[in-house]
Amino acid sequence: MARLLGLDIGSSSVIAGILEGKEVLHESPRVYFRSECEGPKVTVEPDELLSAVKKVIGELGEEVQKVDAIQFAVMCPAWVAMDKDGRPLTPLVTHQDRRSIAEAKELEVRIGEERHLEICGARPVPGGISSTTWAWYLRHEPERLRGVHLVGHLNTFLHRQITGERVIDPSNASFTGLYETLTLGGWSEELCANLGVSKALLPRVLEADVVAGRVTADAARRFGLREGTPVCTGLMDGSAGMLLAGARHGQLFNVVGSTDVLALCTETPKQHPRLLTRALGVGRKWLAVSTLAAAGSAIYWAREQFFPEMTLEEFAAFVHKLSKEGPSAAGGVTFAPYMAGDRTSVEQRKGAFDGITLATTRTNLLSAIIEGLIRASAERIPLLLATGTKPLETVVVSGGGDRLDKIMQRDWPGEWKFEAITDATMRGLGTLEPREA
Image (cartoon, rainbow, N blue to C red; front, side, top):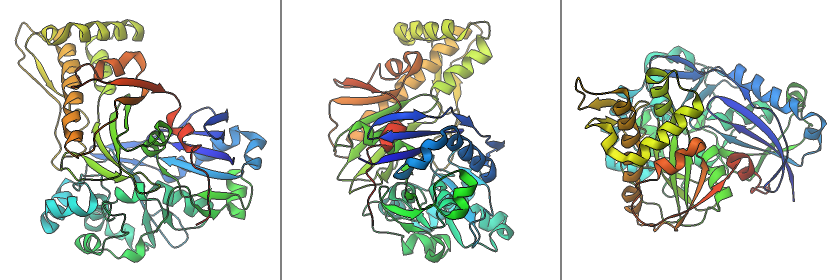
């Protein structure tokens, strides 16, 4: 069994661990990096992220010199353009970026909604499918792309820095909006032509467990690694969690937190306009994904605005109590749960209350948020059933602090069993045994 250095790079932080199989032998403290938010633009400075990666590696000391291979789990998309030496020409544009609505509409009109879905497995959602970001730069900041030699996502950028290779895995490729996701057929000539870019600028697609390169002498000095250590392609963080959950046909995996992600693993992918269909990253498996972009974050926004006098513990208990009371506690107020947009809509939706009167209380507003999220969570089940893959009865759950998972799953139709797992992303990396291409 290989000993791995795992790097879990999320939307705001990095953590490193030494793994033997699913067991985490050592783990670094979490190191945070900033997202720059300017209206609908959400970016991360590449150098700041690399500094965080270096720091977590350093926290593990000499242990990193003894690993057999390195594996990544990364937020996705985190789009970036690079020059011939791998230097970033743009920031890392994250999945929260929504500046490219006009470009997304144009991409979809040119190729057609059904055709885009048929090839890519998703509509060109602004920022969430990164071809829209590329289109934005081509229109608004073309000077940044004059020396472009490679365009990819975060694992592409990490490989360029650490191994010098030009690679991406199928899970990340699925969210570029340029990959034949439903067939794992490689880069699509049709989608590239629709965007107006050359396939020559795109990385090689290798499965996540493949050794895609080795640590260069320069990277060994910069990051404190051992020169020559094999580095696997890496994959999306959600895929790592699904692998820990078993990645069986019909497996449901629910990540409950600030964002709530529900994914169904399938061997027979079927596109749907209200789902994101993407490759798992290894083997011929796919995920049908439905995401509530603001779940726990919407509830705790309500605490800051309406209940600042409550401690976190008091507030969590109050939320749980209101969820038990049901819709009656909302006093006729309803809530549309789109405070961070909608990851399957091109035209971005916004959160909204309806039914407010002079009699409405802050408790009504909080209850309306809770009920709106519960309703949206339950509505995902028939969407996933429409793909034709029958879910297994046991749902694997990660996260769910303050009993949020029980709240979000309250009104799911059908009979379900729930199994909780911890440290899903890091331990999921340990299921990937490195192999040569």
